[in-house]
Image 1 (spheres, rainbow, N blue to C red):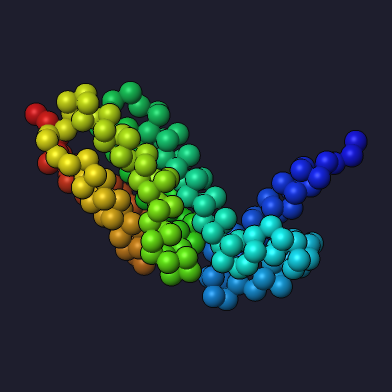
Image 2: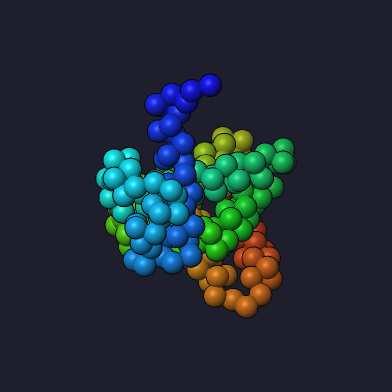
Length: 196
């Protein structure tokens, strides 16, 4: 059975993105060589330029896939509970646990803002993890679970705290313990917003 042009294009993009993700996570944006990426992918530099336009273009695609993957993990973990508070905590923990993984951390929080610029990175973050967080908080507000508080402010506060926690955890010798400490701290912080 012959592969259509559309299927070939999809396979090429997927292969380039997978290889690029490995290079960006292991070497960082600055040191990842496009020549090495296309060689490992078994493709040409022209294919990379055709589909992504530039190194920044492929990095943007990789970051987007990382953010989408993490968002899916957050949703899946939160969905294991029916309780809104537990959903929120499970989602926060899932985000931090996924973001701290070596294959995600550098792309998501170190190179993402510097390679693409703060505005682009924030917009991408708002469309993925922050969007899920905001939706969860809105739902909790409608159910009367939260004290009167600006959902946008709380979303940004929690998102910023979790991003900073990921950077802290990544530097700690016992990352699992640091993840547990972070989860506990998030739970305690959120208690202040719980409607009694």
